[in-house]
Structure formats: C-alpha cells, structure tokens
Amino acid sequence: MKDISFKQINSEELLKKIEGPDIAIIDIRSPDAYNGWTKRNEVRGGHIKGAKSLPFKWSKYIDWIEIVRSKKILPDHSLVIYGYDKTNIEIVAKQFIKSRYPDVFVYHSFIDEWSADEKYPVERLERYTQLVSPEWLKSLMDNHTAPNYHNKRFVVCHAHYQKRKDYEEGHIPGAIDVDTNLLESPETWNRRSPEELKNVLENLGITHDTTVILYGRFSYPDNNDPFPGSSAGHLGAMRCAFIMMYAGVKDVRLLNGGIQSWIDEGYEISTEEFIKEPVKDFGTVVPSNPHFAVDLQEAKDILKDKNKNLVCVRSRDEYIGKVSGYNYIEKKGRIPGAVFADCGSDAYNMENYRNLDHTTREYHEIENQWAKEGITPEKFNAFYCGTGWRGSEAFFNAWLLGWSEIAVYDGGWFEWSNNNLPYETGLPEGGFNE
Image (tube, rainbow, N blue to C red; front, side, top):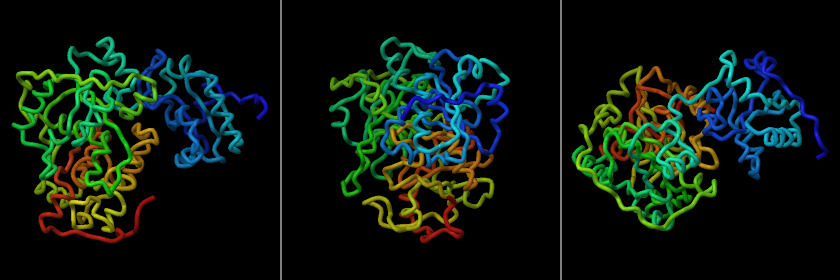
C-alpha cells in the first residue's frame, strides 16, 4: 500500500464525538495501560471513555480481523485510533484501511492533552493494581520496588495442579511452586479447612500482610487426559487467588496473561528451585473473609432470593446437559434457577473471560455480557462452576471491577450433583442471550 496521509482528529473534536453511536475509539496500548497503569508518566491512567482495547501486539496475529469483528468494530463505524507511539498508531490505522474500513482517524494527543485535562473523560478498572504486567513484576523482583507497591515483603507463586514438572521445566526466577491441592481438597474440590489453610500459607512463607503475586501456565488441556486441569495452570492460579483472599491475604495480585506474558516480553525463565521460607504465624484469623465463600445451604437460599444470583460459569454443553464437563462427574445438567455466564468451550478453558494471549478480557465486555443475564453489582452474585476454578476466575473479575457483593459457591456442580438435588437439562426458556 502506498504512503497514506492519515486523517487526524484533535481533542475537542473527539470530545464532541465521544458519545456518538457511530464512533469506535480504539486503544492500541497494552491491556495494563488500558486498565489504569501509567506507562509513560501520563497524568491520569486509564483509557478514553468508551474506548475498546485492541493492543498493537495483536495486529501481528493472523486472525486480527476476526478479533476486530468480535469486538463489534464494524466498517460503518468512524474509527479513532490512539496509543502511545505515533508509528504504531499509524500502522494499525493503515491495517484498518487495508481491511476496507473507510473512515479512519488517528489521535496523537492522549498523553499531552487527554490524560492531562480533567475535562476529558477517562475510565479505568477499579482495582487495576491487582492485575500486574511482566514489566511491573520484573521491577519488583529485581529492585524490590514497583509502582503501587507499598510493602516490605512479597512472594511470587507459580501455580499448578499436581504437576510440579511444570515448575521444574521453567518458571519466573524467584517464584515458588504452589500445587492447588495444598489449598483445596482433592476429595471434595472445596477449599481446605481454616486450620489446614493457615498451616499451608505459613509453610509457603505467606502472612496476611504479604503481597502475593500468582501466575500459571496454560498448555491446552486435553479432555482425554485423566487430569486435564494439570494443563490449566493459570486457571489454577485464579483458584489459589480466591482461596488466599478468603483466608485473609490482603494484597493478592495476578500476573496478567500468566507466564506466557512474561515469555512474550523476552524475560528470563529459570529451572532453579526457589526454596520456600516458612513464617511462624499467618498473623490473623483464618478465614478473615468468610463471606467470599458460600456452601450448599447458602446456595439453596440464594436461589430463593430475587436480589441474588447463583451464577453458572460453565460451558453451554455443560449447562444444557450434553456433557458433565469432567471425567469424574457422572450427572449432566444445571442447577435450576442458576444464571448462565458462559465460560467458553469446556471445563478447562475461559475464552469468554480472556484474550487470545490469555490476558484478562476487556472488562467492559465482561460487564456488558453479564448485564444481559442480570448479573449486576446491585445484586449479590455467587459464582460457581464444576469444582471452583472457573467460578474463582469470574469472582476475581467481579472483584477487579470493584463489586462488593460477590462470592464463590465452592461446591459447585460436583457437590450439587452428588446430593440427589433437582437439576435441569436442555435449552433454557427463551434460549441463550447473544
């Protein structure tokens, strides 16, 4: 394509257009910058109100245009592309023009004007500091300091499910390995007892006021494997995060995208084991946040309350009873009255909550999809799945949004189906909301 003279838009013009139905504002910075982290010393972190996240990194993906369309960025929209780097902005703009998007503008004043002036609206993820980038983690591990870190002690955890080999083959230098079985029972898949959790956390070197950064590795689970969860390590990290928060760890953070994001940045991977440094006392009562978890009777009570949702974070095939989702669960179906929050393809994937690079999906998209099902912050929402992992990831997403009335129904379909309770199969009345 020949050199293009790009149409530019200034801040005042963009401000006038921002609420229009025919405009699509596209933020090509990293998901972390979009969520709220300041990467170039901008005055205010976050993104232009209403902008969609489409990181420059994705422009190199072969299925880039499919991602664009999935975000409902259509050729009849007037596009405004912005980011940090003029060159990258124009590369993406050119890519849109090549893809037959006729009305494309570039905006180059985000740092100098938009972020610097309160009259220009920005949005950010409420608890963006708990979703960290590889760059942030590298700074913390190398220098014991990083933005929005105000602590003296941290522990980095490589989560896995009975697959220590995953840690041994390569992990972030300085990370300890944490088997999810330490925190949940392999008999019930529920969180372990308060006494067990306290002991485990102390042995891991974690107190209630330790900053804990969790991550895992995703390696495409195979449902024919006896233990598919062993390949869903980053989902396991979400599970560990929930249980640690329930126990009382005050500062739990997740590496956005798991170990893959660390590798994508070209950072070093280590095979050297980092020895755990146990502490004498967790420092507070366990659990400190018992309200983060609900059990069977509470789940039954939630179903009777119009101001509460029992939220099913499973796949469609599980929800309609085509499959149970697990090789150790026989019954197929759903809890009657549960609200559906589609996870993706199966029990070990969360495609509807993540991007292709396994970073957390744009939070507006998750929030909007939930709203279609009546899952809103005004209600109490208890998330569940088969055994707790996917429910934990949905819980963490809601917590990042700043929602306060949330929990995980820990027993999930495994517990419900094993107690001879009513269940449903088939399509829900009215079908699925798209």
